[in-house]
Image (tube, rainbow, N blue to C red; front, side, top):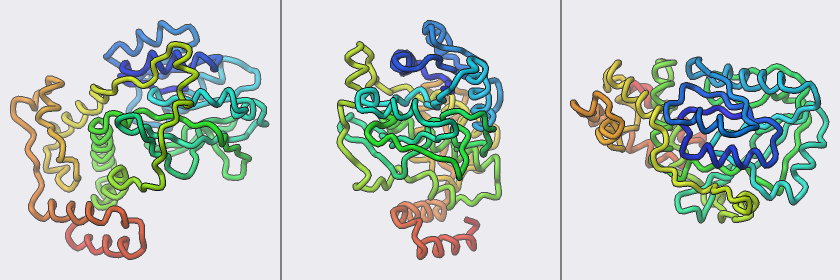
Length: 326
């Protein structure tokens, strides 16, 4: 079950890889304009549905799950992967896939998440393992509008960690695009919940800047070897990703003014270049950094202390920033 929004850079490889093991691939397309729909239509196992709603991950996942359940009344194993994620091909040789298929209904399926870093030599594998799948028992799905769990879970239900395989994530191959994606989330949250403090958003969305060394491991060619053997080019050039999110951020700048987002540390990139690349109206006027000297100073403090931001001392210090409107 895969949501798609302008993923043509990787979608053909993703679908070819998923077809190696999936009976059906449900693709929920959210108004793609880059040929993603046409790519999906060329793959016989794809069931394409329209996701015309706003940015609501809970409703999106419900659409995917409902569609998957309508395809067959037999025993179902549901896997929720984004288009830039691959179930590592060694899962089918080491017994992990068999363990997933044989688990009893209601079992959550967890994998470690290997985020491949630029250069394809290293991967960031954060703890803990994440739930990507469910041996379906028909339960309802619920969750927040963003960062929702992808499949229905129950805190008391059994889960299985597939220890010898990974979900391989390629988004970080284009580091700048991933940072702009984090900018989109920060802007969205600012508009959705104006009461949410900018310092909280900083701590939440700048974890990429302080990836612990203990969470970095070498990239393992076995993760993709099985797909490469089938002629599937997994490690694609990630340049050019994220155009829809980029344009939405620029639209928000145009509609609300950049001052609305001045407390967000999203101004390190070249938004003028992004606007020009996408032919956005702001390319003619430019996108000025709206931060005051105080804003920049606080961002500098948050950046300097980000590695310690979840400790008790720095949480207390952060609360002091309320006096400055943060």
